[in-house]
Length: 228
Length: 224
Image: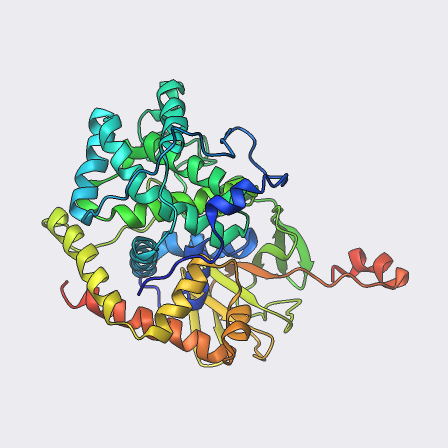
């Protein structure tokens, strides 16, 4: 597998700096799981941040009392906190009992509670399905979409930023084909109509800016019905 | 390429700000005791820091950790002060970060050779945790994870060389690009805020970011 559409430097920098909110970060981190090239860029960004940290000039050295407080803390805390690397810990993954996960990488799989074969899809009409993914990030809407082969992506908005990460199948947008691992970054200025490629259903993660809250009570009432 | 923060740490402390902070575990003396004195900041190379951190991980060396604390304590505090604009909180987050450095030192991989980058990631994550935000991450042990096929020969040498090359490449970046990177890492600012502050179009901020990382990527890939 060779990822062709990568995370832009601006977006990855926000993730590296810790300035990106949870919803967008799910798409970025899941792309990173599939893309060694972007992981190398992330490493370069963290290296750059480290080099800048070394260059920070502070007028205030730490003092003996700062050190006394810290020493007291590190020598008194339970040694349980400093055991083996967390990466070695067997992580309870949702794939247990369902065979080895093969399609949806972490961190997305944990958000969904399992890999593709265990998912409970909600019909969107015209053969498309979705799963809403709850997060604590109110600024974004995160969904997994299943688009039937040859059909356009439904409910397609053109407002605000939008990230689409392909996990199975592929879609075509203009002259470009997006396949597994590819990330499409779109903003409000881009008018586009992604369509699932013939031959295979397309499963993709779509992160968009949270829908606007309408002030009219009529719109508020019908909003859940229309799913806008 | 150096800068300092405008707010004075000690002055701010003496104001005894009754700020509400997300952390309450750390008690910190707001006044300097009479016996209190500054611990001079050691001048250390990354290689020396790397050995010290390895000693903290392997031998739980408190002496090695004290040296690391003298070096990174002031830096992490300034970083947090820039990020949060709250000196009291910055002090607490510095203590939290350094405690995490002590606790996680065993996980540090000296073959990667990049102590400052490792400490930056810990500081970043401490700040995110303190504000109860989430930053989902990939998992290298996940069966679906796609590993890097780059040759693994002489990882140690390569890791250290990469860290050094990156450092050198940073020195060659134009000031305007460094300024954008510094704001992105150290200010809690969106790219459009950075553009506004600097009085340049958003597109220019983005192109400076791209130019900077094109350069850093080329430097690293050139030797693979």
